[in-house]
Each structure stands twice: as C-alpha cells, then as structure tokens.
View 1 (cartoon, rainbow, N blue to C red):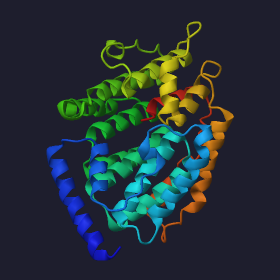
View 2 (tube, rainbow, N blue to C red):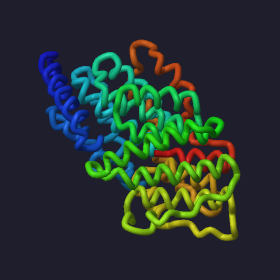
View 3 (cartoon, rainbow, N blue to C red):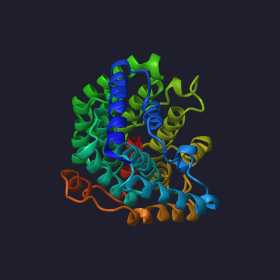
View 4 (cartoon, rainbow, N blue to C red):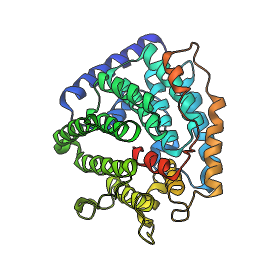
Amino acid sequence: MNATISHDHLLEALDFECAWRTQRVTGHKTYEARLLALLPDIQTPWWRRHEAIPAAGEGGTAIPSLRQALEHATASGTPVLAGTLELQKIARAALRMGAWQLLGAVMRTLLYQLRAQCATPQRMSQACGLVAEWALAGLRSREAFIYCHESLAWGGEPHRIRSYLAYAQTCLEATGTRDKIDLLLSTEATERQESLTRRRPFGDLHAFRLRCLQAASQQIPCPEQEEWMHAGERKTAAHHLAICAAWATQCVVSPSGEQPAPETALTFLRTSGRWRDWFLLSEAAPGACPAPRAEEQAFVGQVDALVDTLPRPPALTPDSLYLDELPHSLAPPTPHDCLKAFLCCI
C-alpha cells in the first residue's frame, strides 16, 4: 500500500480519535472496531470471531490462523495502523492465555512500531496498559509503575490505570495512602463513565479485589462477598471474577474447612480465554481448583512457539530493556504469590 493512502487513513483515524477522546461515548473495543472499519482488507483472526480460546480439537486450525495474522501484521505492505491493531489484539489474547513468550516478542514489536510511526494517544495508552497488566500478573513492581504512569500520561482510560496503580501499591510495595488515592480516583472516573459504558460493576470489582489483596498481603481475614455479586450482575465478567477472587482468598488466607469450587465462575475463565487466571488459581489452591488439562497446556505451548514467526525490531528501544525483565512463564513461587498475581489479573 502506498504512503499516500496510508497517510490518509492515519489522518482519518486521528480525527476519529480526537472526537472519541472528547465525547467519551464508547469503550476501547468499540473504538478499535471503528478504527478497523477505516482500513481496507483487514484480517479477521480467530480471537476476533469469538472470545473463547479454541478447544484442543480446534487447535489445528487456530495455530495456522494465528501464524497468518502475525505474518500479515508484520508484512512490509501492511499499513502500520492495521498492523499494530493486529498485534495489539494478539498481545491481549497471549497475555490472558499465558503465552508470555509470544507476548514478549509481540509487545516489543508493537511498541517499536507505535513509537516510530503511529504514537497516537489512545493507542499508546492501551499498549502501555497491556505492559502494566503483564507486570502486575508477574508481580513486577518497577515495570508496573513505569508503564501505568506512561499510560496515564497518554490520557486513555484513567479508571483502569488508576486501579492498576492501586493494585501495584497494595500488592507490590508497602501499603500506604497512595493506593487509597489511586482507588478513589479510579472509582470517581469509573462512576463518571457509568451512564456511557456501564463501567460501575468493574469499579466495584476493583474495590473488592483491592480488599482481597490487602487480606493476602497482611494475612488478615478475607472480606465478605458484597451484595452486588449476588444481585443484578450475574453472568457478567465482573461477577465471575469477583466470585473467584472471594473463593481463592478464602482458600489461601483464611481457610475454614472445605471450600467448594465455584464451577460456573471457573468455566467462565476457561471459555473466555483467561487460562492465565485459571493456572494461577490452580497453583494458589492446589487440589481445590483443577489445573488446565495437558492438551490445553500443549496448545499454549504451540502458541508460544510462534515467537519465531516475528522479526525482531531493527533497533533496541528503551522498552526492550524493561520487557526483558518481565517473566515469560507463569511460575510464582508460593500459593500466596499465585493468589496475589491472580488478584492483579485484569
């Protein structure tokens, strides 16, 4: 595709982004869908067709589809806006799946391309937010703080990033007043968006998980499940994640006899592509939560092996220095660490 067409698409995308950032009428998924609509001949890989990671029997078609998407995203003829959107989708799926070998290579390429050619505020905020999520799930304080603050500086989704900072302050550093300030700012931003994007359940989830993190960090009894988990929000992601957080914290921090596993919530993790969360839960509460099956772990290994598909960026960037410090496998040392990592998973 020639430079003029690519430039025109970028200008149109920038116009849309400016309007979106002013009106705040859509969430990031709608925003990305609108950007993709501006671009011709965009690929439609498997994780855009449905949220669930393919079952073992579908792995034979999913891996070639993912390889094709990676090749398309990094091809010399692909417009940078289209390629970086492809890479961002792949990175989000790899992060939640636990395919962190591939995640590291994708994020290195994505950040290099964005900074060099397409550093629009919302795209940069989202990309930095993905690195912050990775750092939190890996219990890495320095990188979490660095990328949280850069994401905030770019100006996108402050309700999410303030929550990340609250998690980092509570889980990874000495608990003080900063986590309370970040949580208050997160809650305020979330409530302001409630009428537009229905963010309030996630504001409640952030507050509840922060209390679970405090219980895990200070070895105090875990909080009781809030009424909002039982009324009006069933079958939502926030509901299932809150149920898992309450159950896991009770199992690890203040066990009181048998704690039956929340089957519906665990099924949600498995069918929505959150195998990372499922693995951490199985390590936090061994015996109470079943581990991913051998064929599912093998599928993640196949995804990770696609790291060889990606070319390395042509030059070292400051991001590479930080990304090399982040973990590339899910292996926290203790059940308490696994619990804290799970509670930080977004």
